[in-house]
Image (cartoon, rainbow, N blue to C red):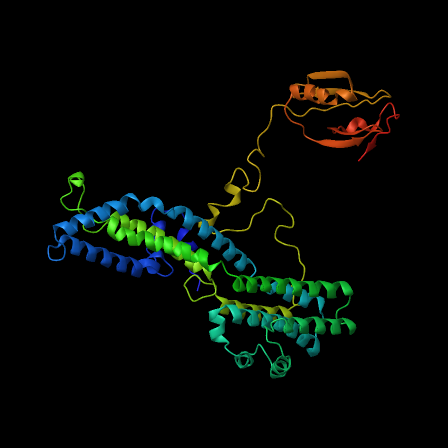
Length: 460
């Protein structure tokens, strides 16, 4: 039931944001309108009792006004922004980890289809059985944590009617006496069936068998993380503190934001009856709290909760399709760009406006990829003798040269600094090893004819 709205923000049009703001399904308006309506009615009720002469006398009104002033001056004692920001950040991290590990079966199905070859009915049945067992494992897990899946498959008989579980397999499940979850049983069936296929040479090597089992274990690990997140939620006391902070804050606002009649210090204030700014604050903070509430359990029935039933259907259909069509590939032929690297895929008139041809710089290259430095490069000349001295020659675009001679290895850093003072970048460098130390020098193709080999130079 996830609400998609990215297509509404495909451009930076001024109206795009309004198309998103005024959507109803999954919106902040749908989440908070009941809370805001109740709060507004309570605020107007208190205001009516205060302004009317039938409920409070003059002395009681003074007491009420003092109470308004007391709450108004101390309303900021509750750090709402800090509490909500930290809470939502914690929940969002858990939510993203749950989504990452929710479980897609394509990888395992592709491994199964490519490692278990054969056109016979028995081999095809083997491939389909292995992927179905993994889908069955996911259904068993989601039945324990997702309300949507639990309503769809309340019993194992419903799994038989759906075709995910066979009657013989149900009997095997029921024969295992265990008071805990049995979601691991189909995983065990996969390992046993794959081992049997390896012994029968259907799986042609131990490496392929190991890779297949490793992918199963990875899928099981992801499902176990979902189970762990459901088993150990965020501590209840933390959630209670945040919820109480928000609702107590706006409960105090019912009194602290009342307009004081006949107050000399507020003669310039407008009596709007309804506190517009407080209502805007209510929308922001309560909407923020509703975000946290929706993310706390993404396996519920809210508009933005995960579509687990869709995931089950997709995994089952996709895995069967992959298992049955593993060897149906097109013949290898030359592509349309066989003779040229300058051709680009054809585009419609509207799409060609933003074609890669119209960009001066490719978006996948660096910002300075087409910038040409005034200096070509510095080309060093390395001469190593017994006492290890070397020279550096720097060549500029104007073919002028600068030479640094007689610098010993102990002054290597100094030599590099002198060379760098003539120009500011090095195109290439390669590491050379001597009998005393290892250090980097710029690469020079002409360094193959060294005059002295006492230093035992070896190119790495």
